[in-house]
Amino acid sequence: MLKKRKLLNFEVSDLCLGCSVLNPKNLKSFLDLGGNFLDTSPLYQDGESEKIIGKFGNRNDFIIGTKVGLDSSCSGLSTTSILKSVDNSLKRLKTDYIDILWIHVWDGTLEFACIFENLLKSGKVKAVGASNTPAWVISMYKDLFKFVQIEYNFNNRSSEFELIPMANKLNLNLVGRSIFDKGLVFNNFSFLDVSLLTLQWLKNKNILPIVRTGSKQNLIKNVNNYYKDIHPSFLSFLDKGTKPDTIIHPHNVINSVTVQRILKNIK
Figure 1 (cartoon, one colour):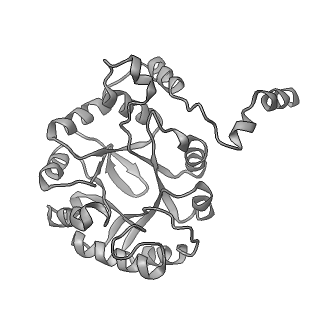
Figure 2 (cartoon, rainbow, N blue to C red):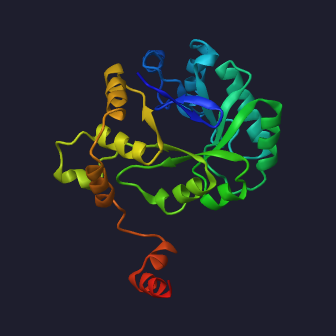
Figure 3 (cartoon, rainbow, N blue to C red):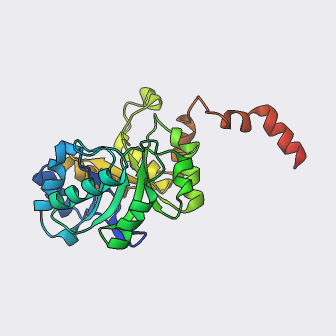
């Protein structure tokens, strides 16, 4: 059974269910396993994902995160689009509040903060998170954002350069999506359980994983794998073995041998 943890003012399950392809059966399976944290969007199944959640069970059974910014009827982060998208989501979810409202994709504008703050004051939204948003934008509004959702797996660790350090520095809660990607490290280790290694790796980094819907057996496997223990030395081996080869600027300069040698001498 999934245990709960405290994130901000929420008691959420240790795994979040990604609801991009959802049906009542796998939602019930997740709930039966102790899950309550959901990640949905108006974009998912053209709103059907939110409708399924809205028709299912007791509202208090779930911590619901949905998104604005990518909506077939009102995309972008203008005041009009955000308000319309939120109201439509509330109707589909059959609720009067959203636990976490995520920016699905940043649209290049910086005028969204005021409308999010108004939604928080109204009670329609309990907390705000950012997904697919640059670190500098999130840090500009560090008092607004409480959650950061990142694409993070063994084959894509680019979030380590900006988003993860920023979130850790600002005490923002990290949630990881698209987590199951074998990456190059597994080419020589085909016998390894990718679910086990990935979930243990993320747990060790204190990043809450989003798992996709699937069979109940697959959900049970993910739950069991999350609570198993792997020797720290093997996790360290995996971490080092999947470090990205390409380091983006300015980190390529900061971490260069020459610069590090000079800095070491200064110290």
